[in-house]
Image 1: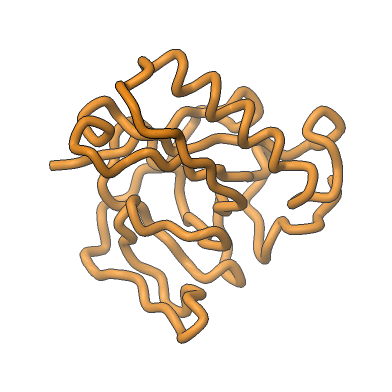
Image 2: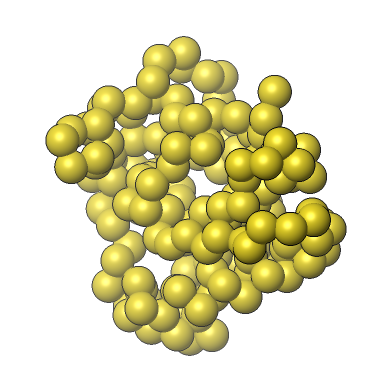
Length: 157
């Protein structure tokens, strides 16, 4: 079983509401936008997907909803590591944080340092890396003080 790991960024609250899996997959329209929530394979997350709750640790599926519904996180960017040997957990986390923060300003419309929003990310695990096909970091943004409705793109706060 392949999994990916969520690292909680310093500005995202560590308290989580873990709900049981609803057992059905999300539904997408022709453009790829989620139109009906469900469980989404973490390896198929796309920029613009919204997660209803924060799932920490190693996960296979995450609960997604249309961004027009209340949610905690939004996928706002991606970074792909170069092929090679697994660089280690610390290196993965450091690089993921740097790359996601670098993408933050353009998405939110305000620098990460000035923003009230937080960044976190899903990263490859050693197991998923060594299976030969996982180099992707999914960057996520959220408001640590409240759930949001709608996209945080251009939110500038």
